[in-house]
Image (cartoon, rainbow, N blue to C red):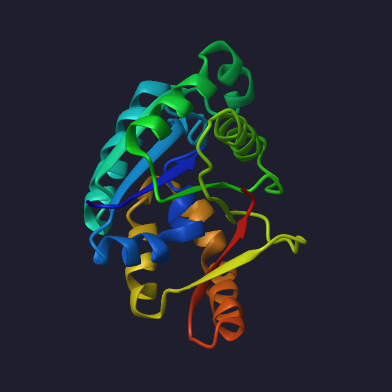
Length: 211
C-alpha cells in the first residue's frame, strides 16, 4: 500500500522553503504527497486585484506541485493574513480532521508554532488541535520558513543532498513571490548546509517532532 505524506501550509510556497528537499525525496521513494494550503496568499500583491493574484498563485502552485511530485494540492481558500479568524468561521479543524482520516498519513508536516508569521502560527494551532482530537496517534513534524529557532524537542534531520538543486528549482517556480523567496535564498542555503553538518551530509532539512 502506498504511504502518504500530508503537508499543511498557510501559503503555497511555505513548504518549498521549509521542506522542498524532503518532498523531492519522498516523491522519489514513491510516496503519495498531499499538500493542503490554507490561504491563497492574495495580499502578497496589494496593487493588483485579488482575483488576478489568486489565479496566478493557483496556476503556479499547480505547476510547481507537479514538477516536484506532489500528488494533490488542496486549497481551503482562507483570507491571507486573516487565517486565524477564518479558521474559526470555516470549521477548519473539522476539515483537517477529515483530511487526516481520509489519507491516514505516515507523517504530517506543518508550519512552526514559533514562526513570526501569524498565519503560520494559526495553521500550526489548528492542525495540532485536529490531531489531538483523533483516536489514532499521528507523528507530526514542524518545518521552518521564516524563523530559525532552537527548541527542546526531538529533531529529525533529512538528508536532501541529492535533492538540493531540485528544492531550489521548485522554490523558483513560485515566481509571483520572487521578492520574498529571493530574501530567503541565502538563509536557506546556510541553513541546509548547517543542518547537513549536523547530519553528516552536505545538505539537510530539520524538523521538530511535536506529536
